[in-house]
Image (tube, rainbow, N blue to C red; front, side, top):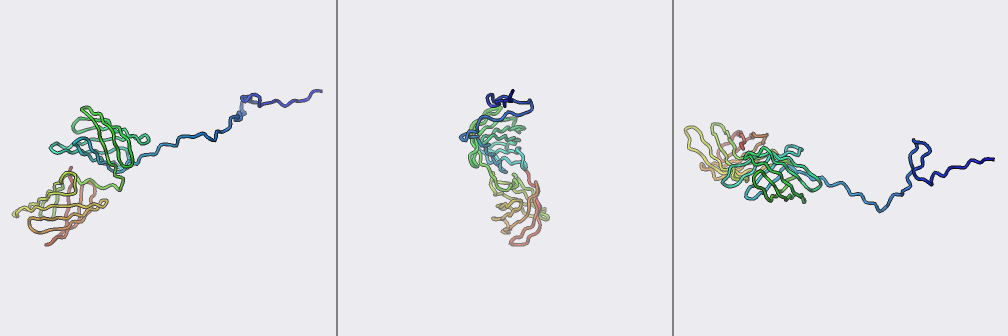
Length: 235
């Protein structure tokens, strides 16, 4: 008499009854196994304030993209503009600077710690150490360099002092003496409040309005009078 003997499948861990039957796992999970967690994604913020030697830069992010519009200034030099593309791997960044107005394209690398970035750059000409502070609050419109203002029959030119929120203003009107004053701007998102002080005609004012792209408009009240104002913001 012949007895059926059940095959011992477990002698060979690779044994399969049929080519469609999966091989059972004979290797227990190691409870001590550690898988590296995914790298933390860096928040690129809305604006980077950059230092490169004697140059000061402001890189403004385009929406939620990884593209920034950069502008650098230095005493006694013409401003420089460029487009920057930021790539992030963990806490490390690689940044391509292209379309530089001075023709000096660059590659930046650096490491992000909190809201600070430090690293090195290599350019078509030169390079060196650089650092930046990432601003992560609500995006605030760029104040530009010059405001061309209209207030009734008066035409004003407000010129910014460096990267500050202080402007030196001068107004002209046919048949009237020019007026000068110092303007101090306070921004809350797209809303702006502007204090006009040290007016050469003694007529100090407060302007309130809203910035929309490269234009601004609103109303103002003064020691004497007031009205509506509008401006075009120039770089």
